Image (cartoon, rainbow, N blue to C red; front, side, top):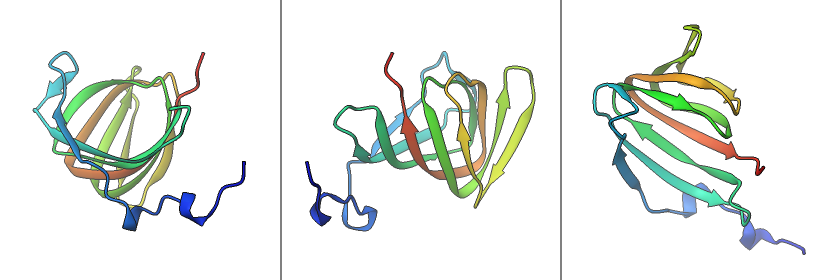
Length: 122
């Protein structure tokens, strides 16, 4: 099946619904950050997603079942693994979080990122 120019998702000409939410109480460690996501693309198999995520300051538990590429556009965050090792990410940082990562995500100040997620089906 051949695809065409009209099948390309251009962020600047596509404005998906903004979903705003607060984290579930059992995930929160500190704060009650308002978060939002704009999912610009979802593959037909629903395993591949691309969009923009934002969050206010706070800290919560994470348990990744998907691989996630991140490009930090605004702010900074501290990602800490289950052994207590941490990584501070800032504007311009690009990285991949592997499926199976367990730890915490702390937004130090308002953070905005582009995400690209792939969740492998069992």
